[in-house]
Length: 358
Image 1 (cartoon, one colour):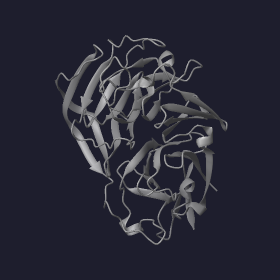
Image 2 (cartoon, rainbow, N blue to C red; image 1 turned 180 degrees about the vertical axis):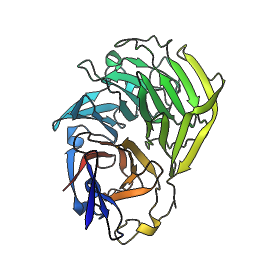
Image 3 (cartoon, one colour; image 1 turned 120 degrees about the vertical axis):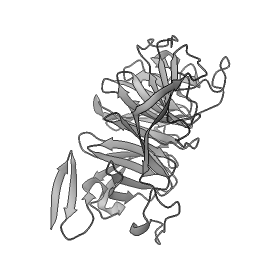
């Protein structure tokens, strides 16, 4: 007999006979795609080109925004209808985007995973997060951007904190960098001098260029896909240590040393696979976490190497997992705030997928 517990829109099925707990959207502990409904919502025919991340617009949950790394673009899917936005005016503002994160009020920011020259008048490391909004002004380029700051080439993931403040997985500096855009400069502007850039956990965060490793924030604590593990970092425990650079923006910039960092939910790099290529339960482990989202008290993670979607507690304990049959492909994910469905991108098949309970 199963006891069913409602967790937000999700059903958590706890077996009384010793079987593992399961989530309805991941198949109630069955660990097979046959136990859920997998639907492809968009493909390369809709403009997907090595998609790296997906985010539900909190002001319009029927709207999904997807970043494309291969052609510096965004696809917006609204009630099944896809719109493709290429960078207009310059690729600099959306160069190899790895991720995006929405605020609660319609602004969102993207992290760019490149360390190459994106415009002739600036150096290769002149790169960082870009601020946008969900209005009709959005064009994925210069005239539609609200702000941009420039101290994180090879950005692997991004998370919203509050107001116009975002955290970036800073691959160039192997850190977590906090970007406060302050008051945006308006569409197509260039005054970045009110920005505040603070770098934390330098040397502790791993990023492979071209492979998103996402980050999320809850109650002031950051959770980040970090190599073969998940790391938890509390920036409130760090102390200011001095200035950092290069300061291309005329902004306030500083480094912060120390801080409580805990690495967990890690395991064998070479788990035992069964005949279908799925890790056996007793050797199941995160191998290459990529997508990461905290929702309703659970941490949702995609493992790029194995193609598994995990649901974990915030202490890294396994709640449920689903093999998608898509190894070496999965990127970012998000959770539908109304239905509890899981949205995930496949970088290799160029697809946006919805995972729903049957």
